[in-house]
Length: 393
Image (tube, rainbow, N blue to C red; front, side, top):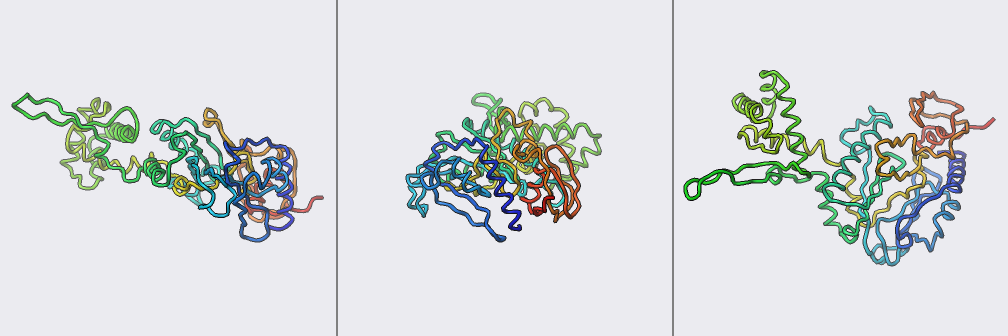
């Protein structure tokens, strides 16, 4: 990035911060603060181990420094400005989750557009929130668009505050479905049998109430419905695609599904041994489809620095936007995170990497060279390294 580009972006970030009304996190004075300035060169320099006593109020700090990126710690400390973690005096931490589109299995890098990547990341976010709200019952959640490639969720329920790394690792394993065993999801109930004469049979069911058991059941029911919509030959051929399932087992599983469809919907998968085998095989698909592919080290790290909501992302020029839970379905990051400060003006940029761009509800196809573009588009291109600031007439 050329010096003229850095100077322009730093100046316009300052204009944004002079008008912005940011809400700091709870207990902001107990947190470590860090930021990345607009320094020269390909690398980045992180300034950290700062406290509000060092930087002043958030508003005055941002107006003065106009940083490229700004962060605060998930942890709260006795002395947040101490230069080593051992000297800070850890009190507790928010439980933070980070979803990054670049790391999602469903994203095809080089194929998906930026907008498509963010849409897939939003789908993953909704799965994560389902775990946090329904399975864990967390209530104090803050959902944030990161300003870049994904979303953050901050959990501040009192129950998580003092959790250490091992406990946070267990939460990670749960939402990722790591080590999830099908048999552990099964409820067994003794049915039938006559007292003193015959032993009761064991009825095995999946819960219809929630958790991974309900997710597994939903997947099995969906697969069963698809199977029964096929003609018999196609259905048997589909079942034979599974490992160790021959024609006999496929036929038995299909017949069991056909005659026990209602029972299966109620969670009773023990309709035939061949059907149970198919259900177990499907477990891998359940985890792949329903897990939340979070960035695991972020959640387990009690000292993690995370982006400040309301700040600007220096790699996109978009705002790190807090999202009301009931507004999430309609949230469009490439529209709703465009700062008003950068709207309503045209600037000249030298496009160094042409191609398509989607932003603020518009689609652009840019060729290389000097171009006059809406400022919010120019800031986006410069921040992402696709343009330099061009000369103004």
